[in-house]
Image (spheres, rainbow, N blue to C red):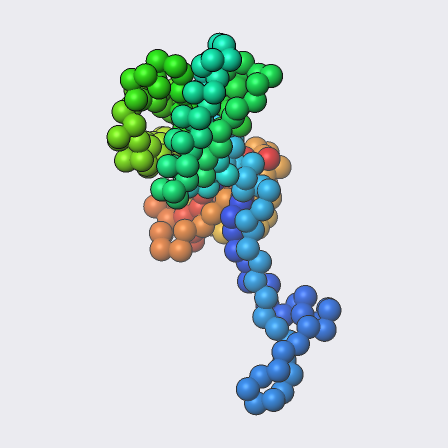
Length: 264
């Protein structure tokens, strides 16, 4: 994955571990033929590194932006009132809205803390990256509406309660699509075709990103590239042939098309 600063992160990968660990720890299974054999193992790298990458790819200067489909909270509802008389009415409406959205299958929270101002709550939930905020004040109750605020674009809109579930779900889908497109556009715009080693070093310093080059596949060549530039092979596509006959660095025969990048 490519981060906003042009460096790469390896995350969300799967590995075939074979029987090595099974033999070390003597892990066996009973086959249909009633014989014992060592298990075959795989490793699926969905861990904290993947979560960190998600935060880096989608976040901004205001904090995290969590894609709706994986967000622990998809919607936060903030009641807005300035006296005790309005508090009960607005909070009751906020809880009613929450019940409707939960019934529609969404993950929702009403932030009814009395010791925090609405502005404080807005900032806190923006920092935590909740995709959609619902604001409800006395005027909204009177007009039978709510205000929806997107985390990704910070756009606000008024929505009638009769359209609540439909509009909220549509916005969450649009937020998800927008975040995906922004990430894909960043990835596409930061891939560079490399002709020779001097261009490789120049692009790496000035632009970063993924550098696509015809490569000999030799470990010594990669080691030299890493020692001189800090970049390593990040991926070798299965069905893509090198675009040039010679390796971009050592000029031996190119056997692979490889993507290079700096990483953390």
